[in-house]
Image (cartoon, rainbow, N blue to C red; front, side, top):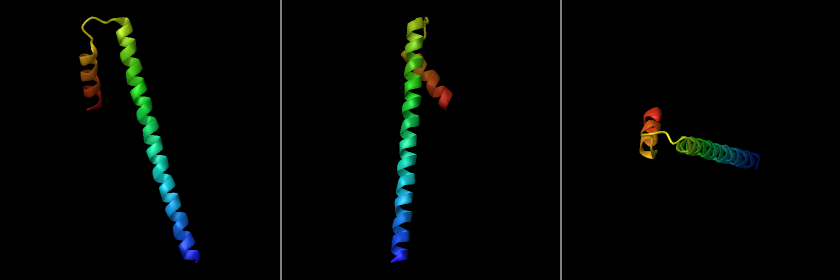
Length: 65
């Protein structure tokens, strides 16, 4: 009986860790996408000549590669 309960507790803990990790990754992803969106909006507001969305996306890809 104790062994079964112990396995159940371990299983629940592992699932919690996985859930927590997935939740954390989702939050991090949302934060990054919000930051990129804010950066693009700021650049558009400044109306920088020759710096359109395509150029911004190329710079982002270069930065993260």
